[in-house]
Figure 1 (cartoon, rainbow, N blue to C red):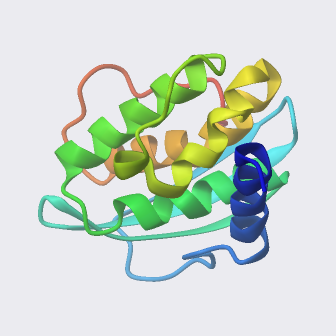
Figure 2 (cartoon, one colour):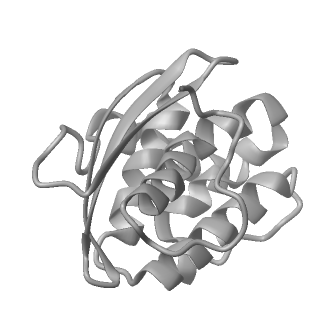
Length: 157
């Protein structure tokens, strides 16, 4: 099995068995984001536990990339402190904006490395970023202090 096939398997596994899917309570903030390019939608809830991400739950509809990326994201950030979560957001966004030329850090991104190939397709980057962008927005709404603007292109009112 080559690396690309392995990455495809990771994405399909997370799509079929979505980790942390299903909206749960309690939650500190809820957001709804839409990717109009692909038709993906996500409602995401975040619960903070002090300076840590205590829980993330979501309901998503759309392509396998958006749903798998959200599943991977939840595994990566639940239990992390907010500063590290935001740094991980930046690491994943850098990978997605790298057009396939950035070597992912497997120790840091774990299953997130599977999306390195997605970065080669600009139309799919928004799919992979949907859950991550929703998380960043939800953290801001939950009262986390975020650097820079929270606005993103996938958000709907």
